[in-house]
Image (cartoon, rainbow, N blue to C red; front, side, top):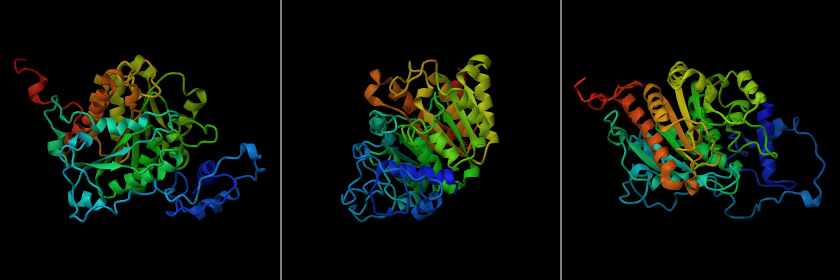
Length: 414
């Protein structure tokens, strides 16, 4: 464990509690890490300088350690569930992702031979204002039709998938919400299923990728990050995790290797020179809209697809809907003009998921509260739909970025 990682974890804890004693975490986790608390404290002792006590009018209000609900974010409580045999549960007209059956435990996933497990991570504290946390609820309320006319594949007929519920977050703290999301992602991945995480703001990418790296190893997981922003910002007012920092935490804290990280769609006013220099120093690859304007989308898209194929054995895709132009996805917290079109995105996502061993996918920054005309929801659902279609194509041995059904390729007269 590096001293940078240790001091980061300690500072995250310090954001929550100042000048007071708190009980040791029940799970041995501190803030956004799964490291033992005593290890973090010992390693950080020599790296955190002594500070003078804050004046009374500047002290941070501490948490109430006697509150019986203090640990509500730790794990899902299924003690009240009725006894039953393990396996997916059909729930009829109850709203679930794509009308899927539900699962509650890893035993359900194993017994049902589940290949894809959807989960919600309704975090929106990392944005600074609310709305993105409603993303999972809104996507569950969408019409249940799935499938791809382009490929004539209905992924629900080819893949065993379930709705695994929401991670038990602390809806007042992004720092405390990272560990339960990470554990839930890891729990799914350990069964061999693919976690598909619906956010929520982009802070959850940290927990998603860290959870996958826990299972597959940090050297073996690559990430393709679709976003208008590079999301590797420095600490903000002392906060080390927000929707602008998951990439920084993953790289700096050693959860993933920079050379296995690809950024797509960067544009706008951020980052400046130091951000690009940081990405280069960490051997990351990036493709800006400026590059796309210069070289053309087709050329850049094929380069990204090739880079993914040349990467490590496993791939996670993190898709921020603001990578698309706000003409198509205005229902998001930080829209930036000049982005990708749905037609460009759908083909690429389907190609990535059909040609690579995808072990995780997240869709983030969907804010249905500011989505006029439901346009953002329609495009967000289609992005997920295309990834699932790609995964189904790979399972069927049709993993090819250019695969189209002969019926839809042309009318047979050409």
